[in-house]
Length: 257
Image (cartoon, rainbow, N blue to C red; front, side, top):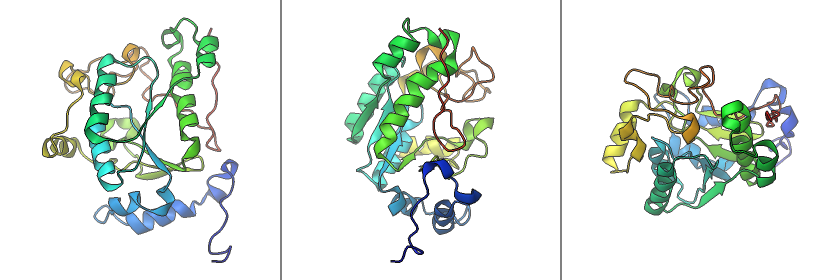
């Protein structure tokens, strides 16, 4: 095959090349030509996703993503960002799904030296939640993804206004990110749980609709945005703080002392 037919990918600093991403356009055209014609199995098995990992928080709906993707590509490893601040129930749920589904689990943890320097008392979440997310989530995820060319996320459009226009395929720097559940409805999620007899996160019965780190998560009331219980101390914060610069690199935010 000629170089013209098989161009060498441009470096991360230039994504998307010339504001046009040929690879995403190819995936979109081949597997997602319209809402009525979606081939998720083909997309998840495309060679562009050969070196892919699932990134899961083992939250309220994680079992659906894991079960479904692993039924299509069972060899896919699962990355869990173990921030050191999770509910005990989440860690037990992770272990239960690990036993049930049999995937290869990668626990990504914060760098001890960074924690000692930036969060020696373990209270950074109270002072600067964004910086806490950066050192406990963003950096460990970046390190864990170093050997992968793509990753799979469980985000969905119905989860809140900030995700209302979530694409199925997108770029995270040079990596391809796939959100296979982006178009699923809440009813479809519930049906999948029932049809496959998947275990639920134990905190759901206590009113937790979206489950993150224990210090920054509260139960939600009926009618609230599913993510309203995340970072209640920061009404304007709705995502975990994965900061991306124009070239797709994570941008470090100085932690408060």
